[in-house]
Structure formats: C-alpha cells, structure tokens
Image (tube, rainbow, N blue to C red):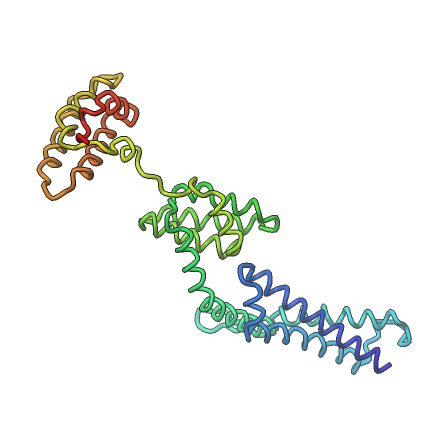
Length: 309
C-alpha cells in the first residue's frame, strides 16, 4: 500500500510538473532549454508539481471517495487525475479581485504564477537579448529589408508546421509597423531578423536566410553595372544626347532642363572620383530615360566613352 501511495504521489507530481514544463516550452519556443534551466523556470515547474502532490494529499486526508468503493483501483486513479487537474485549476484561477486605484489586482494562484512567469520573462530576455541581436545583425547585414520582408517570413513559416495562425497574424501586425517605420533599411532588416528569431528560433531563421541567399540581399543599382569602366569626362558630352536619340519616346523639355542643371552641378564637383561621377551620371540618366535606354546608349558608344588602356 505504501509503495502504491508513493507511486501515485510521484505520478501526480510528475503530471503537475509536466503541465508547468509544457507551459514554459510553448511560451519560449525560441529558447525552451534556457527557459527550463533558468532558476525561475525550475521554480515554476516545482510549484506545479508540489501543488498537484498537495492536492492528492488533501484528497487522502479528507478521504474523498467520489462515491466509489475505497478498495477500488478506480478510486486510486480518479484521485490521481483529480489531484492533477484540481491543482492546475486552482493555480490558474483567482479567488477574488481587489481594486487599487485604476487597476484591478487578482488575488489567487494565478497571481503567483504570473509573478514567476514575469521573472522568467525578464531573466530569459536579459540573457537572450544579446544573442538574438548579434545573430540578427550577422545574418541581416547584407540583406535588403524590402526584399526580405516579402520573402523571408513565408520561407520561415513554411518550415514550421506548428506555427499557429494567431502567431502569424501577430507577426504580420509587427511587420506592418516595421514597414511604416522611418528607420534605415539596414536597421529595419535587423529588427525583422529579431522578430523572426523570436518566432521560429535561430536554426530555422539562419537556414532560411542562407537558402534565399542573393534573393534577399542588397543588389547594386543597374546603373552601377552599366556604367562600370565608363569615363565621366568622356561620357558627359555625348551620353545624354545619345540616350535621348535611343529612347523610343520624346523626352519632355522639362526633364532635359532638370538633367542639364544636375549635370552642371556634378561637373563642378572636383573633389569626387571620376568613377563616382560616372555612376551618378548613370543614375540621373536612368531617372530620365530608364535602364534599358541607358544600356543601349552605352553599348552604342562603346570605347568612345571609356578611358584608353
């Protein structure tokens, strides 16, 4: 009998502790092991286990039989299940609510558990923040926020069968706020990385970034490729006019006047390298005639606008 009682007690304590552990695992999916190993996490699991064991002890002390034969094995298992579920219910309920100023304060088991959960939150966040920020910065350093925001979340979510619709909707709301932010693209890219690591974990996040590769990385403007090796001084007198001739439609005089003013200012900048000025020339022409026309004009002019070897 003593052995059976000891087994029942161990079982109900394990049941209560298992419920507490599963709560922590679901709450800290990006770092479950750290959460459970934390001192507050251990305390949370122990409180749940001890409460379940105490509930079983009370059932025995008050000889609660649930209308069954005291010698029946059924009563034994009903007590184990009742102790486990009763402890969960008591710990997660409030006995009454006290009004303090403009705030309602709940008094009961759930208030104590919430204190432990907040302590776990703080402890995990402090330890985890440095790692998450470093990992997000490393992986998103060369990533374009615009491209990553379109492709990276979906790629991460596709690998996560257990990710709930609620979690995805909450992430979508955070992503919209990030899109609306006035922060630099690089800052928003790192912040996107932090959000994804917290949601899907480091391993899935890093793998998704690597798989997408160049699809989400910053790409140099087309003008940089088109104008590579072009001399600004040689291109300035002939390239704009040639672009106008290559363009399938007439360029408005207002656009030509604007470009002429920008080019005068650019030519006056004597402290800038010729290659940088050539790139700027290409970017300005792209705004007026487009990338295709610029490339066609550069190809036609060929060596005439390139420095002699």
